[in-house]
Length: 106
Image (cartoon, rainbow, N blue to C red; front, side, top):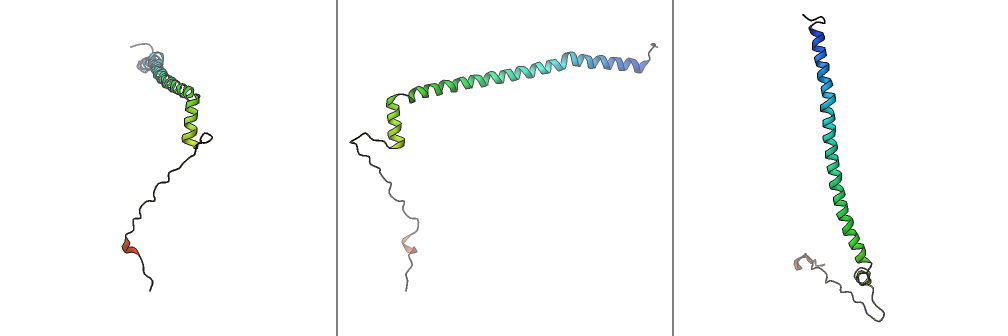
C-alpha cells in the first residue's frame, strides 16, 4: 500500500485531470470561439464594404445635374420656366353597391 492511501491518490489523479482540462481544453474552446467571432466579423466587414461601394456609386450619381433634374421633376413636380405642368387625376373607383340599393322616400 502506498504511504498516502487510496483516497489521496484518487484526489491527486482528479486534480491532475482538472489541471489538464484547464491547460488544454478550456483554452482550446476559447480559441475556437474567438476564431468563430473573427470569421463573423470578417464577413460583416465584407458586407459593409460592398454596401459602402454601392452607396458611393449612388452618391456620385446623385451629384450629376441630370439626376438632380430628374429627381426634382419626378418627386417635386418642378418645371422649367415656360413649361406647363399637368397632373392626371385617376378616375374614381366604381362603387360596389348595386343600383338596387337606392331608397325611395314616400
